[in-house]
Every structure is written in C-alpha cells, then in structure tokens.
Image (spheres, rainbow, N blue to C red):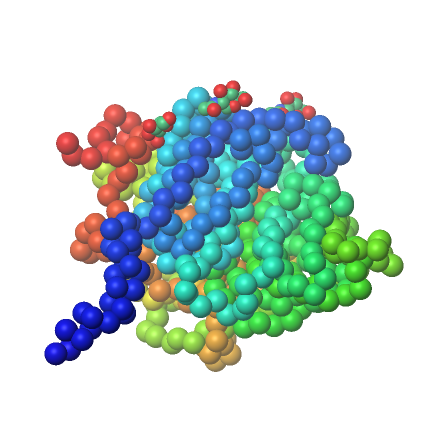
Length: 507
Ligand SMILES: *[C@@H]1O[C@H](CO)[C@@H](O)[C@H](O)[C@H]1NC(C)=O
Ligand SMILES: *[C@@H]1O[C@H](CO)[C@@H](O)[C@H](O)[C@H]1NC(C)=O
Ligand SMILES: *[C@@H]1O[C@H](CO)[C@@H](O)[C@H](O)[C@H]1NC(C)=O
C-alpha cells in the first residue's frame, strides 16, 4: 500500500524534520529594537549642529529584516519635545495604527516611550524611517530599512557579495528649529547648503569592494527639498529594485533619485583596482551641490585619474500590466492646505469624535478657485481601483508619497493631463512603488488598488511644502468593519487631544 511504502522510505523522515520546526514555531520571527532618541552634536556640514541621534548614532541604526518579520521598536523620546517616527514605504498592512504620522498617532511626549509593533508583511526591498513631526527631519533621526526575501524565494539576481545603504540628501547648516521658524513666519527656505551621504560630506564614506565581485547599493533620498543624481565613476549601475519591486534590469550610468525615493542597483567591481568616486549631486537647481564617497577596491593601487564625473541624467519610465475598472481622481495639490487637527484623525475616526475632520473634503474633480485651509480626508472604499493624476503647474519638481500602499506609475508627461493622455499610458510592465515624481509643468498618473484599510498619509516629500500643508489623508473603508480587514487599536496606543482618557480596548 502507498502509505506503507512511504512509511518505510527515508523520505518522510526528511519531510518531518523540515516541517516540525515550522509547525512548532508557527509565528514569523520577531526582531526587537530599543531606541533612545536624543539630541547630540553632529559636524556633518563642517559646523557644529544639534542633531537627532538614535542610540547615539546619526544616521540611526539600520533595520535589517526578512519578509513577514515582526518588528518591535520601543522608542524612548529623550528630547525635550514631542516626537514620532514614521516608516517610509512600509505598508503597515491593516494597521495604520503604526504609521507614526500626525494623523494616525499621538506624539510620544518628552520622557515617554512608545512601542511600534509592525509586521513587514509580504514586503521586500529598500526603505527608510524618519522623524515625522515639526521639522525634525532636518536634524537627522532617519535610517535605512532593508527587507530581504525569505530563504527559498527566488530573487532575480545572484546574491551580491555585499549590500550597502546610501542615504543621500540635501542638508542645511541652520538647525531644524530655525528652519521651522522661517516657514512659520511665512518665508521660503533658502537653498540647502550641502549634500550628505550617510550623514557625511565629501569622502566621508568609503565602500570596500573586491575586484571582480558584484555589490548591491540601496540608495534613498532622505533630503528635504532636492532631487539628486547618483553615479559611480567608471562603473555602471544595474537597476534591480525600486521601493519593494524587482525591476527590469536596465543599465544606467547615472540615476535620478527624487525626494523619498529608494533604488537598489548592482555595481560590479570590473575596473582596474583603484579608488573611484561615488557622486551625489543636486538636480534642477541653479547652483549644483555635490558630494562624494569612495568606492575602494580592496587591492587598490591609489586614486583613479580625473575629477568626479559630471552627471547627465536619465528619466525612468515605469509602466503597468493591469487595466481594470477605474475611478478617477484629479488632485490639484495646491488647492487644499492641510491643517493639523487637535486629535489624530485615526483616533477621532475610531472613537467617532465629530468635528475633527471632514470626509470627502478634497473634491474628486476640483474646480479652480482660491485655495483654502482644511483638515482634509478623502474617503474611498476598499477594493476600489483608483487613478490619481498629480498635476504640477510650477517650475520646480515635486515628489509625492502615499503611505500604506504601492502603486503603478502609468504615465508622465509635460503639459496638462487630459482624458486623451490615457491613450499613452503604459499598461504593460509597470513596477509598483510608493513615491512618484512630478516634473515641472507636467503630470504623473498612477493606478492604485485600494486593498489596505486605514487612514493613510498622502504627502509632498518637499518637506517645507509638506510642513506648510501639501498633505492629506486617504481614509480607506471596508463595509465589513472586521479585524480581518483592519487590526484593532493597539493596547499601548497613546491617547491625546479629544481622545485622551478613552480606553484602547473594551476590558
Ligand atoms: C537615553 O540617553 C540619555 C543620554 O545618554 C540618557 O540620559 C537616558 O537615560 C537614556 N534613556 C534610555 C531610556 O536609555
Ligand atoms: C538653533 O540655532 C539657533 C540659532 O543659531 C540657536 O539659538 C538655537 O539654540 C538652536 N536650537 C537648537 C535646538 O539647536
Ligand atoms: C515603554 O517601555 C516599556 C518597557 O521598558 C514597555 O513595557 C511599555 O509597553 C512601553 N510603552 C509603550 C506605550 O509602548
């Protein structure tokens, strides 16, 4: 009989040995972090500045995780002011409770702590975290997040010999309080002073490689106002991942990284054994700022000839392989300016506290009129499929991010969008990502399936614009109102504003 013969073969024993640990442990692994947020001196721009450190580090510690890991981060706020961290690109499936922005979480009061309980569900890729309140992002407090595929899940390139993170960004010599004061008094920020790579200026970082081997570089723009271009002297970059999606593996000699975007590239050390420049420089600015790091061959015979390479840039087009029934939203982002409420919108929603925000407050098809101020929440239903057009009437590039989601960028073009623009949408081979640039006097169109219930932040990644109100929340409802669609409020949720004193869960 079949069973008998299997029972006597060694194969079932092998199976049992493999299956037992999984069935006993059941749960996905947990990774615990305890972070102490303090002010400390940093000298990144050649002057002494008060930076935001995490466990004494700037940038903060990197989170290294595997798909589906449970990530528990206990954040102790040792600053003299409220603080929150948010997790750029982490989808927080069913749990905007953990998103860590003004509209979803009460600030962690000075001297208190809050534990984020997150699962990096079904995600892979390169992301970062950052401080979301006030203008803290200008003081640091950010760090890299990498989510590796689970063992045995195929990855479309061989394991690299090394995996490096490059957090690149513009930087001001003025501290975050001064920058915030400038914005609060109605003035524009001056252009940034320098560009930093991993918190350091020119040649402050060296990445050591062995000749002949291939390395992964995860590059995120964590800056405040400027698109950057990155390039490796004498080397090319093979693009392999964008914010959680593996990509068509195109080769680039230089790559634009817009605000809050992350890319993974493979670089093969296939040149004579020397030290080469890695250059990050500003795009679309009248004065070009740039900074360098060093790609150091372990058998290097010295510095390669020539100056850091200048940067021609390449625009990247993404496209889509799905076409479905769609609802159409047109967003004119200058139209409504977000005003923070006295209570996180998520809590007001949960406790049904009226008057904190108004649903549907951004019209699907806005008419042209004067801008107005509002605590804006756009409502939509789970499982709807939306098309969002970002129109940019200005001369500066914009970058927009949506929390809780990734979306397909189906079109980008100069001029004004019209229904006819849809004819040129690329519906074939798009990559899903969570941040989209909108070129000056241009539009970008995205498709997004609404599959994650919650209150999700939609923001300009130009941090001054975000601070001044270019942001709103997307409230995605499920009629079922079930824990299958959305996690219950965490027991440790901080309660503030008009939600102060409530209970997090019925006893
Ligand atoms: C955080 O760091 C500060 C400064 O080093 C220290 O005084 C404080 O005790 C630390 N807090 C925690 C919770 O580790
Ligand atoms: C920021 O800089 C201003 C002006 O230099 C200074 O007065 C202030 O103490 C600084 N604040 C912080 C938080 O570093
Ligand atoms: C604060 O940290 C303690 C452990 O030190 C933990 O038990 C507690 O749950 C944390 N508070 C919150 C609100 O997460």
